[in-house]
Amino acid sequence: MNRYILFVFEGEKTEKIILDNLNNVFFNTDKSNTATIYTAYKAEIFQLWNEIKSNYEFSDYLDLVVLLKNRGNNNLQGVTESMITETHLFFDHDAHSHLDTISIQEYNNIISKMLDYFNNENEHGKLWVSYPMVEAVKHCKKNVNDCFVNCIYDISKNMDYKQFVAEVSDYLDLRKLTIDDWYYFINVTIYKLYCLIYKTNKIPDYKEVKDVEQSQIHEKQIEKFINPELKAAVISAFPLFILYYYGEPIYAKAMLQNR
Image (cartoon, rainbow, N blue to C red; front, side, top):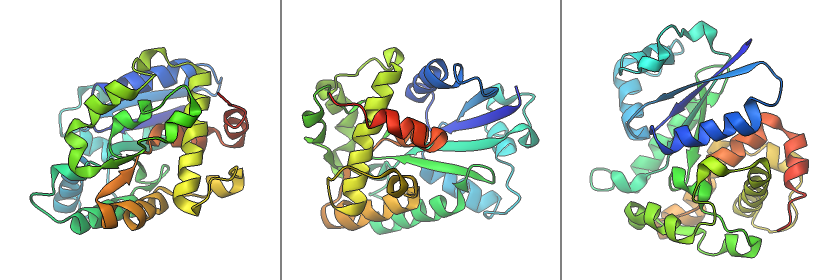
């Protein structure tokens, strides 16, 4: 193997199931000599912010592998920063967890700073945010017309989001996702993203979609939903990551999906 991708997840369970599936469906079949390394931060993005701010002062010399090892991540034994080709961090927006201690504006300022700092997978790492949380990946129906119903979620109800998704999803078992399922997820997410950014539901063009940054998604969430309504458009980071990683060939296959 000559490419090592470090995946840093907020949690240990659902995220690991997703990665195992992505390994089976994509990475282990694309013949790119890619190995994936997984670890969990085991805390929310707010805690990651405080740790970096307090101990590393957002230095250009942050060694994320050492930071994670210091948190007891045993699966990083023998791994060094120099081995890692790229790093991707997946965290939930999860604003509801902190609204009793800081304002929504303060919280989103922190997320914006994190997205600015973790903006390159070949440097500090690239941060991917799911709205409202990781379960957004399976907030999907097999009938495409139903995918855009209840796709705006009240942040104050985030504690109930997992149960809500369990009641509405047609994709409850993430272990069984096929490559066509992922193409479909990417298709639906592209339309959601395009509507969020460009305020239109026309067929998205790849050149427009590929240039959308995570920071831009966050800014539009704040502008359109979070600040005025304390809500968020349900968007999973995982389909966007696959689109980002594999580029236009995946986009072309995803846009052929019509269920």
